[in-house]
Length: 297
Ligand code: ASP
Image 1 (cartoon, protein in one colour):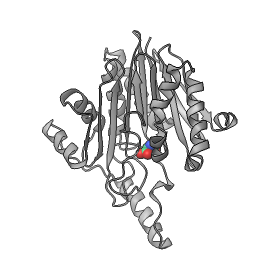
Image 2 (image 1 turned 90 degrees about the vertical axis):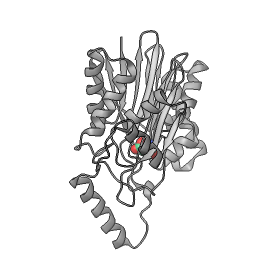
Image 3 (image 1 turned 90 degrees about the horizontal axis):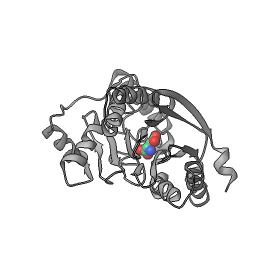
Image 4 (image 1 turned 135 degrees about the vertical axis):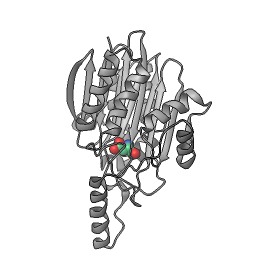
């Protein structure tokens, strides 16, 4: 049995369908998630991740991505990369071809180019239009529109196969109109993703600063290590965030987890969250609401 999870309705569907196609054709879990995220990164209609997503306050796309293998705890990540897609493939290469975990910004781009990735203009007509609109509003209001006012749609994916063996991966353009150079939780091992075959895997999406401070993914996996179900683990992480981090209540902060026994769960601090699942090709999308985690505070 192969179980794949993917965040958010629109980009999550593109990613999980591509991931399953790849898995059906015999891909291992790393490649399955790489292909899933690549499909969403390269789709210019997805204003979520990669090509054509929402730029930073300078009108430039700066992308973050990460992958972690639960068998070996190997991990690779890139952050604030400009002009390269798919960044999930660059993150995987950092894991497989260097002794490092993360490469940043221009030097990550240089590594990608050395690896054969071609520099690409990532802004589409639609992302330019959205940026101009944002810029005009900002000038109109004569005040800085805080970069955290609008999240983008990170795609974070978890996958499990018999063994059990798990891989986690994430790709994002980060917060919409973020301060140039800002990096969120998604490429940070333990914040945006975590995987350990001894226990399970977890991922995050939403307000990256708060998820990072909470070490949300690592904390969910450690809760499961102590015997919590994935749902209990996510509820506990979110409840603790709501208790200790006031900003976490202002915007959706999501953590979701997949245990080595194949069960999974998710929780969100505010609003609703959609999680796709695929069990041997059987697709489902479930909506999680903030009330459940708030109730156990
Ligand atoms: N977590 C991402 C970040 O803070 C954004 C998101 O998930 O929408 O960069």
